[in-house]
Amino acid sequence: MAKLMSKSELIQKIAEQHPNNMTRKDVKGVIESLAEIGYKELKKTGAFFVPGFAKFVVIKKPATKERSGINPFTKEPTIFKAKPARKIIRARPVKAAKDAVS
Image 1: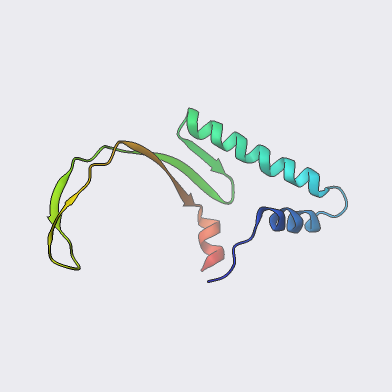
Image 2: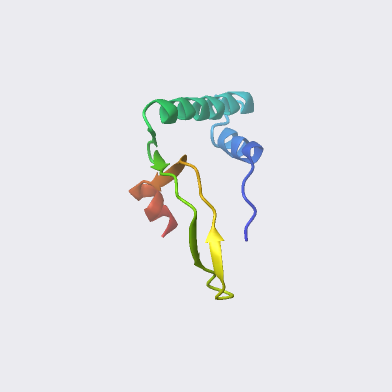
């Protein structure tokens, strides 16, 4: 599997694409403010849209009760633990991002 790009590598690549008017410090500030605004919007409205990239949506998962079932590997009966209610974040890529990958 390919190595993921780190935050500093991302900042460096963006700064290289705009050599005339943006420093690494400026790019870092923009990325951090984008993340901060995104967190606040997700908490307030439950959705955050980054144009040309993805839409982030909060999904509420209900609590589940403890239940019995069968382990598919060993075929033995087992008990699945209860899970509390929780919120998860899903990223839904926009069409342009999907087309860039295919």
